Image 1 (cartoon, rainbow, N blue to C red):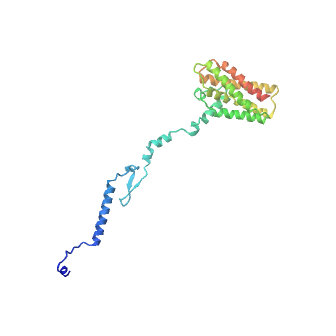
Image 2 (cartoon, rainbow, N blue to C red):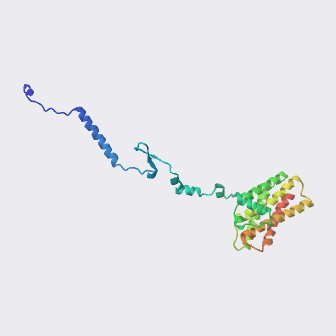
Image 3 (cartoon, rainbow, N blue to C red):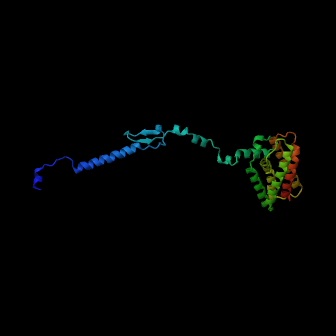
Length: 248
């Protein structure tokens, strides 16, 4: 053991602090290498929309109106029709059909009348039932029953008479719109009785009004020139039943 003092051991500059620093450098270097090898996710923001900030070190999304205006999704959304039009409710067409019915001498537009629009007919049927109820006659079932049976019969007759044919919805729409003069007659029954000469004459005038308007629309939509009186006759029978409900 005394001989150990005669040997001079090798003195090195390597210390524990240097060992910790080397380990830290190795760990940070391996993490950077792994991060660089990983694939970067594709950016959802286009490069032209990224602008550097004042320091030039990070990028922030910028707003470009031209980019959003050229987006196909925004253009397709702007081209969509209104919700009421998708549901088949067009107030302009409803108003034009109503004016055509109120003026029997006005020519009908076949392109507008050949539509299965049931918003106006349902409204007029409800108005007829409501006015009859105000006159003391609860006849909603008769109104809807006669409307359904009449539409079926008129639909069959028109398909036999015309070469092009017609849909059931179109027939129901036309007959429902032409029910508007009958609503006027039922409104008059609220204030005075129609069981007399004046009431009979008024009922005949309303029946003629409704049937002429319906036949005018049918010949315009189905291009059946010269057959208005043939179509007006079954329509007059149908509206005559509504007149009987109103008068009696």
